[in-house]
Image 1 (cartoon, one colour):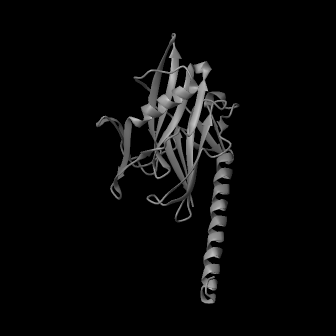
Image 2 (tube, rainbow, N blue to C red; image 1 turned 45 degrees about the vertical axis):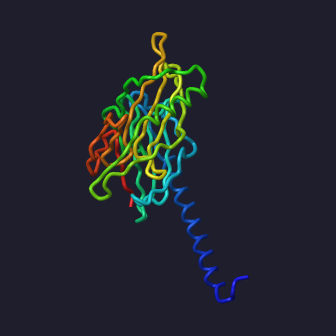
Image 3 (cartoon, rainbow, N blue to C red; image 1 turned 90 degrees about the vertical axis):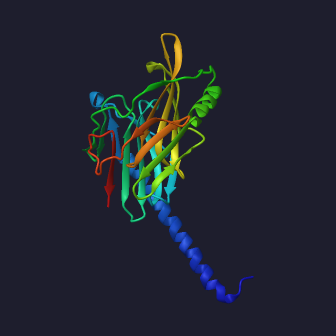
Length: 257
């Protein structure tokens, strides 16, 4: 039994924990409502909005960038191939950041309350072939995708924090196919700081003219300089993003105070 002199202190600690839990849940509720408020579509088919993931694909915190609470959503073509991704999070100063990256081959439009807030004018990904066999069965394809993703080492860097090596999250946060486009299987992988996704890898098994092969593409989910290596050789890199980004850029974030 605790001494009586410690009971008031214990009550204060428990109350503080309850208040923090309530604030955490409030922020997650705001994040989900914010995601619902965005409508994304292909400008060539404005009457067919993209489908948003109903639940966050990933929830994260990041002590380095002071992200107190965050969640990741994707928008896809009919629940299949992902065409856009967003990380929505709160900073330690209470501001909310809505961070977008295009995964589309063409143009996109994002609206909130009827106003266009993001309209990338160029593709967000560059696809290249990746050597490797493509298994026939889904579970074996997933295992192969995980093997392929593990061959890369990713890092981000900036003047303040220096270079930071990222860790590969062991499972894709999104799995998809799209028979109409010849995509047999696909996975969206994250290289993260803690659980905060900083670099994304999309892996797809594509069938064309009777042959199935792997295609892959990297993209950023951070303003920091990004680098990916394979066998010690740099295979992909992007410079530090300009601040602020333009709404026409494939990578774009907006801060809501």
